[in-house]
Image (cartoon, helix red, strand yellow):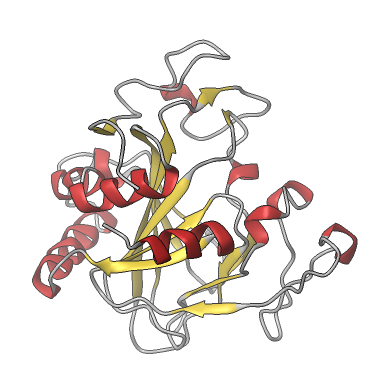
Length: 269
């Protein structure tokens, strides 16, 4: 479990670094399975596999959505008992489900940036904005190879222009609208280095992004986007996984493709 200090830090800042949940050998096993999926050797296919920056770009960010559908080891990962318990602890909820997972792999030298953004505005079929992502480094994520950066307290500032913050390509600073920042607040960028097998959590409205990878090491990572059990299907626009939804608008989002991964009663505080 997370300490009370870690839980408090998360609620104040919108992110927190958790413990090492996989050994180096286990992280390497996930990396091998990721390679199998990327190279088409997996037994099944994920929901999506694409370069987020476009097929013609010289820079590459490989995105895989719902890799748990393609590989049984990643399916086990979304149920990881320690991760799910910590998510439940941060949410303060009895039931946790998976919205979807997302791999972002930045290859050596040509790994592209992930611009500053918030997650929830890109998910226009679910409410409320109470989701938490568990971001696992499959290899060490460092400043050199494009680790994630966070803006503390930004999860309290509401949606920012549809979730897109704006990114300065010269120094990877934010190009936000100052009029949308609460009085007295400061936009501070914090690098979040995470070692292989370690997990980091962030709120779905926390500003985050990651610069290009110009190093000789790849940066594979998987984020599982967890939702509290009361999350509803409320479509206002489309989404990649919407065709998997089997409930009616206004109903709690659940089903085969949104598995319940934690339902063990109240988490002690």
